[in-house]
Length: 531
View 1 (cartoon, rainbow, N blue to C red):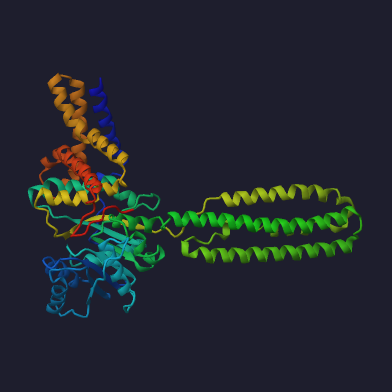
View 2: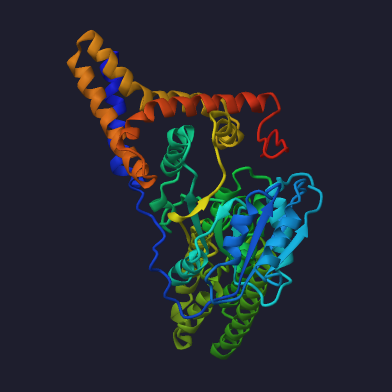
């Protein structure tokens, strides 16, 4: 029966999600309030891109200016073409708190091609911060709608310092007051955690990387290492793109190109070394076979070949050094340990040769020479094919917080719809096939269980009814911790199927908007397609 097969597959999927998907549903990755025990308080600079945020700044900016942080803390607000007097409102807030020296308000420059507005504003703020004194060890990248708990910065820095993290990010508490917010906002967090399980994000051994753009603390040197914020300059989902660049060491095309360059450089140097070694050994072999050498002459020839070998070694080392310098800009770590020193091995062969037994070893020497070259070539090939570790990879941490929150209101279905459609199809890489797969998957995972229960009751098929109900029950169990985190009634946990249906329609509409050239719209700007 196809009905039973579908409900059974849905049940198996939920068993997998609960048991083997990084326990994403537990909501247990939370910034610890007690994590504040650090000795040093490094300089911090916050960068806030703000576009028409005059209404929220009296609360959000004030929360940043009132942080309980013992170290140096400066704030840069970049006015991104606002038309509501955002810049003056920010300055007035600083004056009221008598903290005008702590806040710098700069006017954003026109948006250049291949940049999104928020990231371009952040880039200007980061450039401005690089000239401030004292130089900041960390940058706090935050949105203008975020109200920070008074100890939030202290806890973020403590988390980064205590665990030697390159990036710490908080999924701030989203506003959840209206009916539509209660229905859809917790599910937004749930789907995000399922897509990027926080435990996997926080595990250095996992490739999963994600961040929440509303609150990101990043080491200045780590941002510089990956090439700056410009490496994600055209990303609508910029927070996750930044986290991926930090955790994986910006290991996309740059790493592949650098790996290929290393292999080519090794091969060329090995060929050069083998040619010179073969030349010098061939001369020695010819002299031995012609019986023209006595022991003293042989010793001179050996020493001469050792000198050639040493020169080859020095040449190889110089070439390797030049290669490393050329590839430094591609973030490739030094790989000297991967390249064997064949010249030293060759020298060791001569040093082990007993000159007194030369007449008896004339036959041994050519035989050993015949085996010597293939062994070196095989070792060279193994070195080139060896995997290249990337110590440029960073450590990141992503978690929830109950005390730092977003004030952005989503009072209607339309406002949440616009938020989701802005990036949903981007998340699918603008692929029609991924869109079809998503629709099928959402239907199978979220809609089949309640439909199976209804169908089983109508057709009096107990097997289908029980299987579908178990799948729906597991779904509700998985959603319950998120509902509890937002302090909602547990009955909301059973509403996930209808919520998933709405998000599926939003995803389809996101694709429609993209195809009509209206995708990626935000605050008066349209980004039809972001590569």
